[in-house]
Image 1 (tube, rainbow, N blue to C red):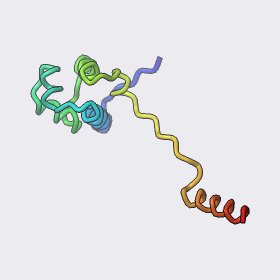
Image 2: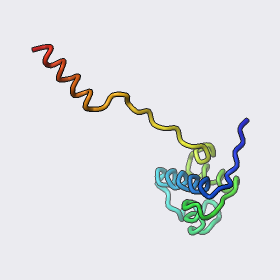
Image 3: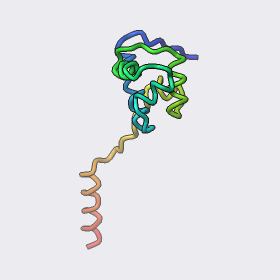
Image 4: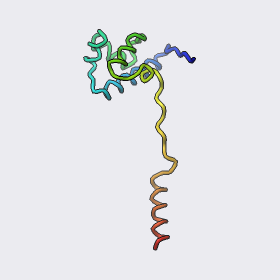
Length: 102
């Protein structure tokens, strides 16, 4: 079992960025999240900017309201898979096939 502690400002900034991303993806306003958590809208704004440290209960309630898991808010997102070929290589391959057919 891996337990991590968010003690640096950078960690709370990243958490706030994820919270904002998920909130926007869910189509929710800061005000609606604040009401669901029993907080002021400015508290959500400060959470999203990393200025306000949040606790596990607030995160759990936010995740439930936004329709995601707690892990979706806490864990770093996995990077997208990047294609090994560049578009230029694909165009070159298409041109080579066209010349081979001719």
